Amino acid sequence: MVYLSKGRLTIRNMEQEDAQAITEAEIEQGWDASIEKYLKRLEDQRAGKAVSLVAEYEGRPVGYLNVYPNPTSGPFVGKGYPELVDFGVLEKYRKLGIGTVLMDVAEEIAARYADVVTIGVGLHSGYGSAQRMYVKRGYIPDGSGVWFRDKVCAPYGECVNDDNLVLHFSKKLR
Image (cartoon, rainbow, N blue to C red; front, side, top):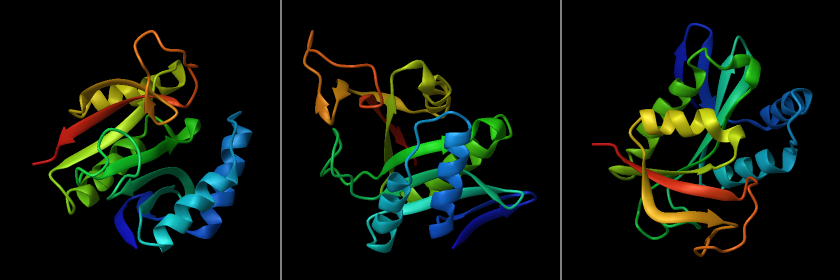
């Protein structure tokens, strides 16, 4: 399904061939990428557990974001709030507004399920631009503190500043 087509940018559902193309592009830019992550998103989409979006720019998949109507981990489980998961735009396509449009479409989809949307963001510097973007878009921390490997990290508890260390946010959509 195509959600938006505007000039050189199209936002549509992820397809099987996107998984390989995005993985190769991420490896090329030096990221520790694995196709399994995208195959899992596609499986979840086929099972009706997620809407997996791809940003296609000039015919190439360059970004992705997934909407999970019923998250299975984190502080919002069972509250009926959809979660945005695994958001990324390839580095050479940043600063073109692609991430903003992906977020706009994902939030529109999330609004079909609830008036609040949630997201978790990593804390290391690689997530700096995402952290700033979420705050500018009106996301606020949920107040549960830092999570590590899908559990609240106890005060003074041990954790590692990797992709498993996150802070959860929510945003009122309407």
